Amino acid sequence: MKKYAIAIHGGAGTILRHLMFTEKENMYKQGLQDAITIGEQILKMGGSSLDAVESSVSSLENFPLFNAGKGAVFTNKGTHEMDASIMDGLTLEAGAVCGVSNIKNPVQLARLIKEKSGHVFLSGPDAEAFAHKMSLPTAGPEYFYTQERFNQWQEVKETDSYQLDHTDKKENSEKKFGTVGCVALDQYGNLAAATSTGGMTNKRFGRVGDSSIIGAGTYANNNTCAISCTGHGEYFIRAVVAYDISCLMEYKGLSLKEACDFVVKEKLVKMGGEGGLIAIDSYGNIELPFNSAGMYRAWKNSDTELQIRIYE
Ligand code: ASP
Image (cartoon, rainbow, N blue to C red; front, side, top):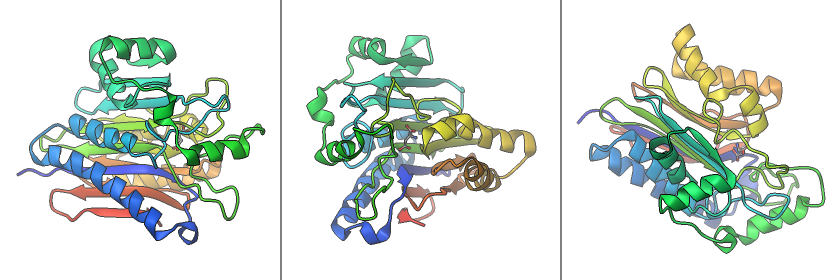
């Protein structure tokens, strides 16, 4: 069997060990394990990296503790507006969607946009109409609602501020959820990446983050790497994070680790951009850098054991 590899994330932010209960920590780990196992099985059986990232992200979207699909954060209007994207490193084809409120698995819509719409990026109600045409499962607001997300929103809704859903503003508060993503290398040497999010709590004005923006939150190219980001999206858009890492590899010959460390630990830090990412190259090397207190993450390749971590 040829080498394959996969990594997933469930968001980066101020995830503090001393504020996490064991039971909750175990629930997160279970969610990560279930999601990565689905993708890994596809790769092991000779499936494509594209199928693996779509399936793993769908599983993370269905898991209510992460901020994507079920359990997405609230906007300042008390709604859910979700963004997602997917990219195929072999063909450089991509699909993306932003501002959808009733799609159970936005990553699946991103994939359909890539393959069936003739376009790359659709938004809002028209994207939902396309999903309907494609018979993709939809759901009302009650499906996406969770009490914890609602409470997070109540704390900030009268203010102008918006926040990473997993960033602790108060010392004793419990806010540890996140955007989700997956990167994978299949046995044929093809890379793929996918990302999905509810965005940031209390976001306004139809705000769109990096997760649905190809080159910012998601990128895949067989010649370099596949990347999925999480963090303060405004900074990730301005730093064009995912494509920047690919370019540092392609044009400057940096290794995956060198490129990731430079962008996440130097460039973003200088700009004030909190967050992290998961990355994989065509040799199956995996990097999971972040400049926040923690990042929900799991990774595995064909010859190593599954690893699951939350903190540094
Ligand atoms: N990057 C996402 C956004 O800005 C948020 C996150 O990673 O949790 O929409």
